[in-house]
Image 1 (tube, rainbow, N blue to C red):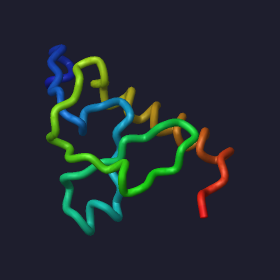
Image 2 (image 1 turned 180 degrees about the vertical axis):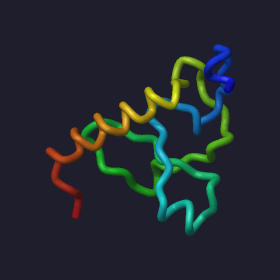
Image 3 (image 1 turned 30 degrees about the vertical axis):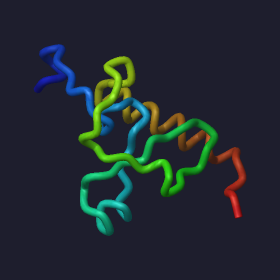
Image 4 (image 1 turned 90 degrees about the vertical axis):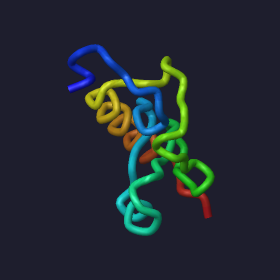
Length: 83
């Protein structure tokens, strides 16, 4: 609803490059998301609190988050997993 009105909430969970993990949600509750970077596998140090402040320039729509996640998955497929 906020999105349709042009409103944004400048928090980490609203960043275009943020994505929740089912395992993290089960272990830590729904308070943390990964910050994704194309071509990079996620690690514990990439977790942030969903309600921590974020720059307005980093915020996107749900559709933009879905598209970024798709692009991240495709970029990660070509990158070997760290041992």
